[in-house]
Image (cartoon, rainbow, N blue to C red; front, side):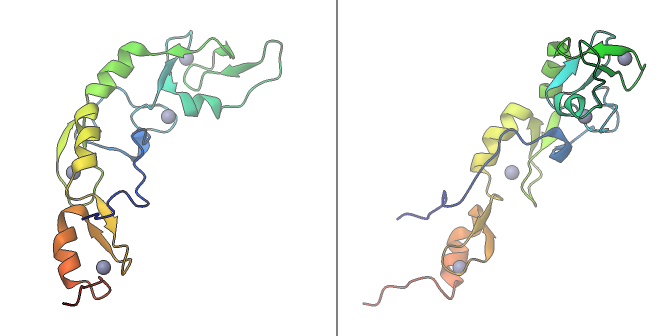
Length: 155
Ligand SMILES: [Zn+2]
Ligand SMILES: [Zn+2]
Ligand SMILES: [Zn+2]
Ligand SMILES: [Zn+2]
């Protein structure tokens, strides 16, 4: 039987860390000084300060030649294009424990584990394709049993 579990279901593995819940978000050193969330796609600039890639691209660019922006922490002028991936920090960020994004689920673990878990999570939200009420994958069979719109075969 096709439960239609994939119908309209879009899973975004790349959910930014601002939308992720960390088990230890208050005490970690990987907070972006601009958005105050754990950095997403951590970048390091020549002064050594680190930010999210997205946050850096939102900074004011001064139209010098070459164009520059001021580091939000130390105000050092920094040329566009001199930013680099902060591999060291990013590796450690990926090891931080996050909580499954699905409401009601308390599963925690490093990002790679949680992303795999989320695709199989019983708390994955699911819109019934018959009555369009919101349920979870784990409750699907129970929901279909009581769904008023579910097509029942007459014998
Ligand atoms: Zn940021
Ligand atoms: Zn700086
Ligand atoms: Zn889960
Ligand atoms: Zn239904």
